[in-house]
Length: 196
Image 1 (cartoon, helix red, strand yellow):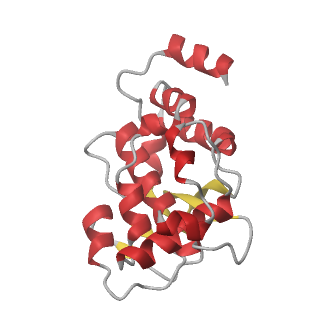
Image 2 (cartoon, one colour):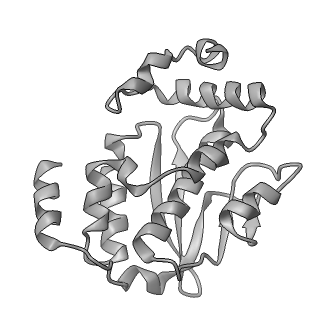
């Protein structure tokens, strides 16, 4: 209970999946957990365990969208239901690439590097889930400094990982945005949209 108490997050908060934790408290919890475990890439490990169903209705909406682009637009429009401390972004880059990124609102938020690690690992897992096993990013980038040991980042996110970038995100071919999502059910999508 040490890291939880030091971060001011009651352990009981994790018994109910609908419980909300303040963004700053989550950042402090990630910081405390990394310190307690001696694992500098703690946030990366948290994000690596993410499944699309963890987004609840937004995840179902994404899984049942017609295309990858439509699914990402649903994420951009509705992530605020889960995350009030940052915003997902989709940026067109030159040479037919896009960046799915994450930007924290408040400068000086505790645990910023860990929060970016969690978010980018989640974004990577989301893209794998909706694009399929053949999807690969051009590269993954982080706005924080290069860690002493970047190998865990390469293990989770592939060989092309960069640090000290302007924005944290996943760069991939824009052509993926038009790809259909296998097994998408438009009727289920409409039901989920109504519920949201």
